[in-house]
Image (cartoon, rainbow, N blue to C red; front, side, top):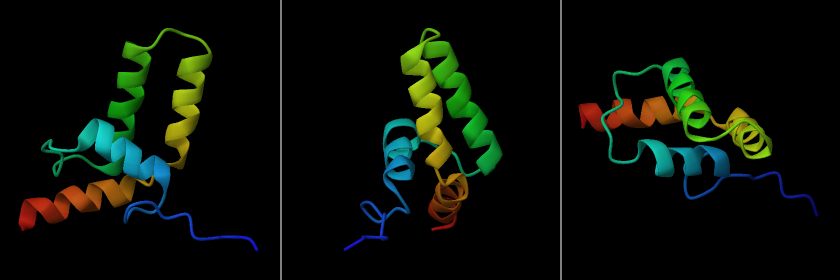
Length: 80
């Protein structure tokens, strides 16, 4: 049987949940667009990891993140 439900802890997938938890959780990000969030994380990875395999894997990992879902989450928190 093929499981097509890839949700994780209420988020659309593991990558989205993990990036929100590790990078954005507890911060004030309602004023950032999804694109700005992605750029923020890409810059963080590039500044914190040396060139090589680990950086390549981190950048590949964030390709699966649903940036709009994270942005909407913080937008909802700001209006609650």
